[in-house]
Image (tube, rainbow, N blue to C red; front, side, top):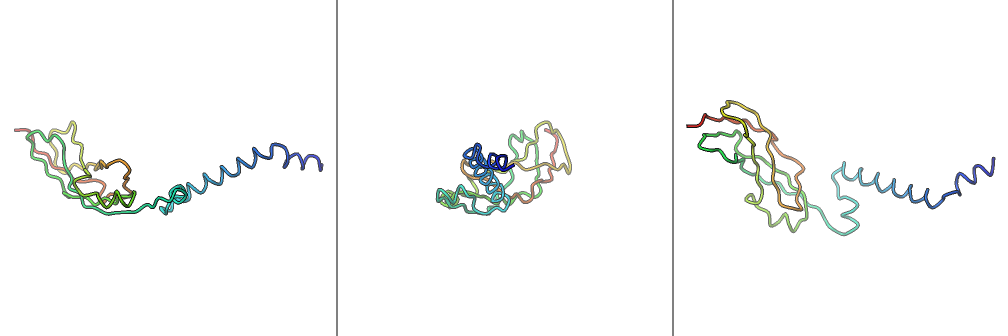
Length: 139
């Protein structure tokens, strides 16, 4: 019995220790990402993460001579990233678009807003995430 317990601990000790450390790192990464605090990876390499809220106009690409009304016309985007990069960002660097592919005419159609961001920036919140669209037929 003693030999069994000793082999349970000592046999492949380094592999078991490596597995334990890896499991702890994965658990810490998941916990920090859920709590929206600074990630352990950012803390290890010394990069701070900051947030910024911008109000961005909603656009409809390729409206093609149709009268398109979007309500609300602006959305609030909470951005997250490197503080130096966030300071230089403006509303012209971020696009909030509504895809109306295949829609000929609509009144009160609800569509999700897609956000296009520069590299190195992500968004954590979009308010509202859907807008009401009215599309008149082509002339």
